[in-house]
Image 1 (cartoon, rainbow, N blue to C red):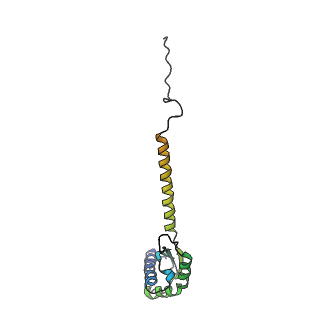
Image 2 (cartoon, rainbow, N blue to C red):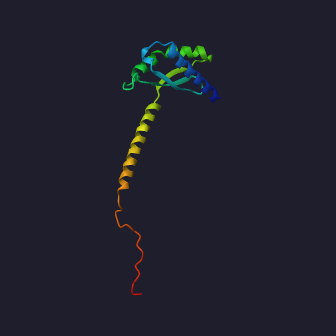
Image 3 (cartoon, helix red, strand yellow):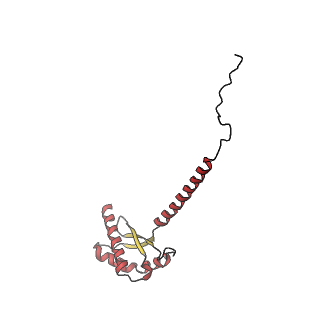
Length: 148
């Protein structure tokens, strides 16, 4: 039987252990701007997927995601042994590192919302100075004969 609460608890603990190990123990400069965002563990507790993001050193600099991925792959064994030592589970889960797409998708959604706001403002500006295409009163009343 799969214990989801135990899997969530182990995933949270793995995130903490990996983040601490990256900060204090692994001395690869490519990992200096890596942030662990989430971890998911399978129901049988055999595999863990660690999601990470890479921040740029400067605002105008593109982050080195390829270098961070290679560095994480080379440090996977050290990180897995650290996870095994500090969790105390019978079988240490294998670690797979995946670049988290959430920040990029959030940035893309913000850009789309900004475009939508600009488009709505343009439509509102055009509508303010617009006049009806037909007559001012499109609902005509029936003509009453003056002879009657």
